[in-house]
View 1 (cartoon, rainbow, N blue to C red):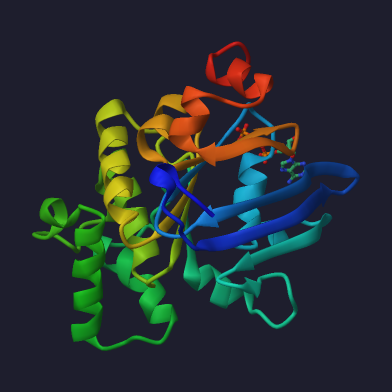
View 2 (cartoon, helix red, strand yellow):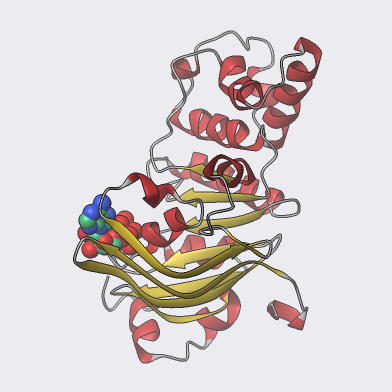
Length: 259
Ligand SMILES: Nc1ncnc2c1ncn2[C@@H]1O[C@H](COP(=O)(O)OP(=O)(O)OP(=O)(O)O)[C@@H](O)[C@H]1O
């Protein structure tokens, strides 16, 4: 697949003819897209169009919702994640997720970040210390918290809590980070910090973000996917979509005529 500037990059996620049903209701319709490695892909579209549903499909979070049925294929790194051979835990280790509301555990900053590695069998204090520091540095939170890692995560500001949740996700060394409106509950300064962070992280990780904020999609993403009623209307390099959308419905949405 090609990206802005015409560079050919490898898609890390390939979604092919995906249909998803909640009971009788079809929330995703024949979705086929590719997501490039080490870049930010933004999902945009009006409320209820299926953005979060597709995001959750990428790490099988929809499995938890009773009555959900899926058809089609989602391949991550060439492996069909819905084939019986793949364990959900393996997928969630490779694909971390950050939600709209920061949701740190009611534990210390240190324990929040060390939790995932411990679950995966790392118990050496030295190794855990390294992971905690590295993850907090990657999430650009280290300098703010390094003097008191025992402090409760819940005592941090909303923006710090969200960066802690990103550090927690990074601690298990994922390849992909899913962000479901990760800045929607934050003030503009915290939002800017998370956007800057995403910009840095894309050098090492693939990021897929759902956002209601078109300016944010235009600012930070390299690829944008526009959804309407469970269908992908259009997807392309972000600069192309915002400069010259192909479909009139995309034009109407990005120019604020509906949504
Ligand atoms: N657990 C569920 N059970 C039944 N229907 C659901 C469920 N979750 C979502 N839906 C429906 O699926 C459709 C897509 O929802 P989804 O949350 O993916 O949209 P969205 O584009 O992310 O919306 P928003 O921007 O408001 O978060 C909506 O019609 C929604 O009501």
